[in-house]
Length: 279
Image (cartoon, rainbow, N blue to C red):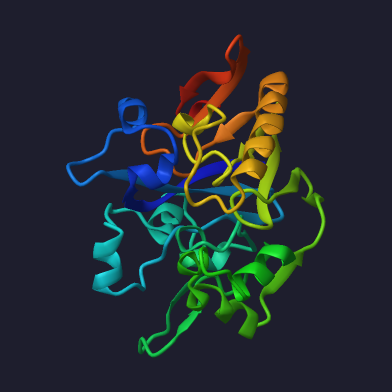
């Protein structure tokens, strides 16, 4: 098995939204904001090459959005899925499977691209099966008013139309070396992949723990639909991660690709951060 970090660009989001009830005087020292209170966040994906499969976990926001949308979210950076795959001698045609942790647009927007005449959106990975939890699909297809803006149906309905969609309906091994678990605090049916790699477990923590700054239990997203569920899920997971020395692969942390955690008198806290190629 081989693992590759796949950067797909960055976006800007309000710092208060990203840290919830935590005061800015605290979070800004850990994760700085600009003069408009906007923080820059990575959209970092993970490619798992099992030998038989090339599995991409999430795919960023995509490059098919109009200028108004790009300006609203401050999309920037030179990275894209295609460019990052190319650095490893691969193209979107090589991807056999795409695991979507959830269907918020910054995680699944790269699932689609314009066709040649830019008249419609089509799957960006023509040979891939797209995996998403059934609960999340139902949630995204019929969203509540609070979460509705986070789902752009144009980013995921084309894969249904081409019969490339497959549902994850229970936790367990999806592929050899890759197991999935379901977390509901951030959004119903968020899939968190656990990858057994060499002598450790790498966990793609998605929006359960968006950055290393979000490790303290109360440092949570305002976007979480069920914050008390997030609190319980984080506590259980972080204790497990500390006890088993999991490597946490951080999707949104601009400054750190990976980290580990440890138990302390104040609870589970950050142990160390490091670049992905050094694991």
